[in-house]
Length: 101
Length: 280
Image 1 (cartoon, rainbow over the protein chains, first blue to last red):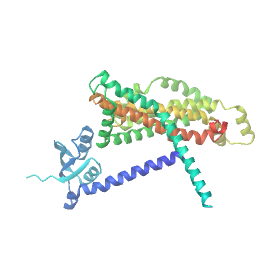
Image 2: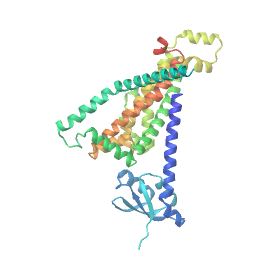
Image 3: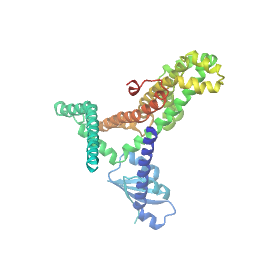
Image 4: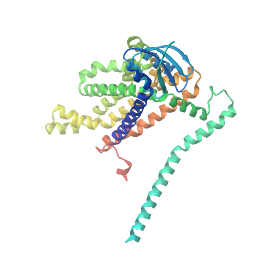
């Protein structure tokens, strides 16, 4: 009985964690969703700290990293699906569209 | 009447308090070794006086732990490792259980396979990993194959010896009562061999755990083994120690909530092991 209870508890904790991060994720990319993005776009991702190798490998899977300035990462050619996935990470603070002048 | 209720409440409160005291004193007794180690470690840091990357203090390790959590690295690595571990262990143990029963019950198969199995048993998984990397590349497949290999042997040998040491009386009695081969396997062989099968499971779980760390050091870009390796190569020794502590805690968690419970639910239930309670 104990293994099932512990597994259920672990599952519950994981599900609530993913639920919360997903809910926060939608809020983080409010600017992107308000535009109604359909095609791949260039974005600026603000993190809570300067990225490490671990974060860079995830960011590189999402799009092409153009440059990193402190805790800010500039990404090229990111699909909407990848952005949604990226926004679920709790260490991502916000995602904005990269408007080049 | 009210007085009676009050007395009952007070006595139940007292029982609750004494239980709490018992639990807290037992917890203290169990953790006294860890507390002493931490105190000794903290005191030794200024005495030895080395750079923190060479000999970090417990406080540095705590900071590294918080940093890894805050950056989302630790739980991602733990999840990766847990997934690989489960996959490797389940595959290895299932294969070994199936083959173990087959070999133990069939002399021809035993003759054909045992020399090969003994030969492979001598080759440790670390020796295989470079080959696995060449065949399957870096990542999940290599690690799962290596872990399956590690989990396989302890389970296989224990299953075989468990079945081979069943008293012939049990088998003959079941046969006399008209048991089919299928019934013999599931109602005589497996339940009778259960204590040794579970010993095998415990050994496999332990070996696989060690194998996981080895494999991740060589063939992964994430996981607790990778954290330990990466921490030492980047001179982030505190992170390496966090990885080591996580390993130890994960094993205690696994043993306490899964392995011991499975043992209790199977072996003790069938009366093959005397528990402390049943003795008393």
